[in-house]
Length: 214
Picture (cartoon, rainbow, N blue to C red):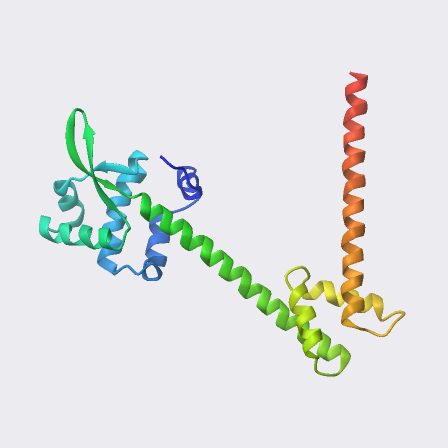
């Protein structure tokens, strides 16, 4: 069995799978009744920590209040949308039809990863817009295509607050320019890395001295 991140989140009760499904099922292209059926199937997984388990229409009937045909149609819909698979498994020396919900968990994890990437890209675009506005105000003019491209390349590395700090420091001695601000921030980052290395070395030296004494 392949272990993915969402398995661990559910295991340690960091993630409420039921609430998550109810919030995102339209984005997963599921109808309300399909989402409810999926929740019933996922309950078996959450109770027994098994992604593959015997399909029991009697259990589903008790859970959903629907007859075998209605439950079967919803299960078929979930199979066609690749949320679940039907498999034949040998259980206690008897071949049984089983549900495999692995695809559902993979789909959810892929959706969350994609949404996180989209959110990050949205933040970068907003940050870029804020930075452009900041320089237009401080330079008192529109930015050139070259300047816009330069800021676009660096928007993922520095935030608006970083450029505000750079503008403040540079304006003490020089006229403000985007190039000067970026160089200032690059040098600042380099200095911080060197400081971090010195701190790390100091800590290692401290523990080494303790080990020698002991």
